[in-house]
Image 1 (cartoon, rainbow, N blue to C red):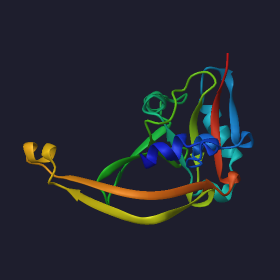
Image 2 (spheres, rainbow, N blue to C red; image 1 turned 45 degrees about the vertical axis):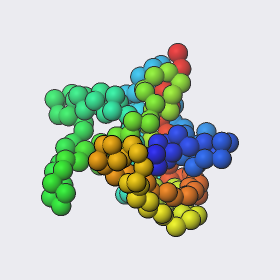
Image 3 (cartoon, rainbow, N blue to C red; image 1 turned 120 degrees about the horizontal axis):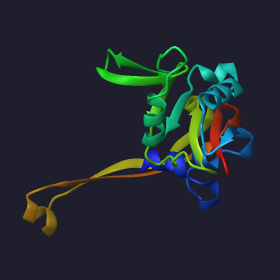
Length: 176
């Protein structure tokens, strides 16, 4: 729920100020209708101030990730790099030196959509927890008793807002 709110939260709906709430000054429109080219990715990275590029990450849909993963340069090298994190023993992906995060809440790369975000979260957003996190253990109800299970519910009230729009960029697919 927090991941989805960080992408789709809209200021006008009194939700988190997610990535979709990025002002128009953060938008980089693609050069071609309905397509995000590698030049669009590089142009987006270059439009972000160098001090924010160090901690910036790409946030994209699985659909766009799969598309970018298959792209090669003129001599056959893949643009996307895959490395194994030695601490977590899990693969990490990067594009032009910035890590890639896949989020299913990001819209598909189709005409008119904000399809990819480049964000330095440490500088772009500020958040707070309004009430202490509460963990409830529910086991005495009928449903759990019949299944022989327990339910854990975490209750939390939080808020996030954009504090520095210079630390984020959005790739918006040009409408046809």
